[in-house]
Image 1 (cartoon, rainbow, N blue to C red):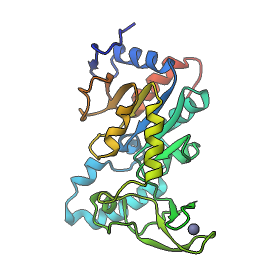
Image 2: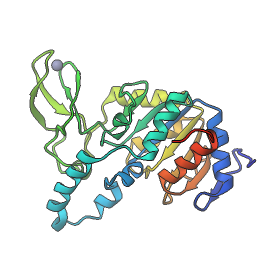
Image 3: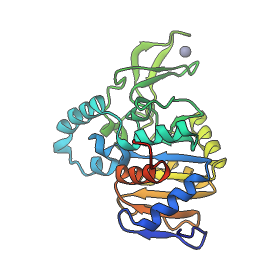
Length: 264
Ligand SMILES: [Zn+2]
C-alpha cells in the first residue's frame, strides 16, 4: 500500500495505482467532506469556468442560449451519483460545492447546512432578502446566464425576480453569487465549519481560482485534489494525494476499490 504522510505527496499520471490506493485508504478513515467544482459537471455537458472565460463576445449570444439549455437539461454524472452513495454509506459527512447547476440536489442530496452546501448559490433557487426564506424551483429563476454571472456583468446584488416571499411578501432574488458579490454569510460559515471538522477534504473538479471559496478546503486536516489539470494549492503541505484524471474515471475507480461488489 502506498504510504501517505505529510512528506509523501503522490503525483502521478491518469488513474495510477498508487494514488488511487492512497485515496481509498484516506477515504476509509471517514470524516470526509467533498468539495466540488465545475469539472464534475463537464461530462453532463455544462461548460466549466475556464471554457466560459475563453468565449469571445461574438460568441456570447450563442453561449447564452447554449448554457441555459445545457443546465436545464443536464442530469447528474457518475461523480454526482458516487458522492450521493458515499453519503448514504456514511463515508462522506457533507458535500460543499461551488456549482450552481443543481446536479447534486438532482442526485438526491438534500440542500441544507448539513448535507449539501452550495457556496455560490443555485440557479434553481431564490431567497427573500428580508426573512431569508429559500424557495427551490423546478425552473431557472435568474434572467442572467451562468456565463454572465461568472463574468460579473451583473449588478452587485442578484436581480429580483417577479415572485414574492410567501412569508413576508418581499421580493425574491436568485441565490447565485456573481463574481463581484460577497458570499452569503451563513452559507460560507456552514462550509467553514464542515471543513474545519473534517479529516479529509476530497476536492474534485475545482480549479481553486475563485476566492474566497478556493481557501475553504484547506481548513480540513488533509486534502486530496482530483483534477484534469494542475491547480493552485497543490503544493500546500496538507495535500496528500493528487489525482490527475477526469472526475468520473477517478470516482468510478474509487467506488470499485471501496465497494468491489456493488455496482454504481
Ligand atoms: Zn420573506
